[in-house]
Image (cartoon, rainbow, N blue to C red; front, side, top):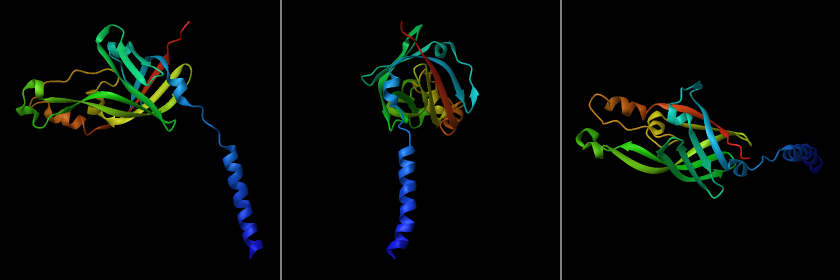
Amino acid sequence: MNKIRLQICLPVLLASFFLLSCEKDEPDKTASMSGLWIQEKITVDGVEMVLPDDAKSLSLLIEPNGVYRTYAKDATDKEHFGAWTITDNTWLEITADTWRLNANPLTQTPANQWAKNHVLTRFTVLNVSDSRLEIRLKTYEGEKKYSALFVEESRPLITGDNLDKINEEYKTLKTYIYTFGKEQTN
């Protein structure tokens, strides 16, 4: 009986040992994240979108102390900041301002139709190197559109004509891939 157990267990143990010893240790992505990144493109559900001017000049500064800032080179009012961290060497988590419709927005004054929140947003790090950063975000179109990820769009005045469209944006799931190139220092 012990001989049979040994004949069964030994190959399983050897296979486990070889599999574990062959795993590659992935380099820590946290160290590669720091620096000034310039947005190059965004794809939405696999289709490259035409970037508006403020998105073309968007800079993402990731500081090693856990703080990030985004800004368009020609628009200081578009500057945003928050905290960032890498989790499980896979996820880039950043805090960002986002806007949601208040309850019954048609009965609210224009200043009270939208509520601002500061939320944690999780991106999948697809690639990070000394020169390129690619991150993916799966979220609802409204969540991305009405937030400071990475360029904040203006929020419209809610009317009976656009309320259904905006509500639908918060129900439409999309995949965004952001590609940045690293600004090289001399």
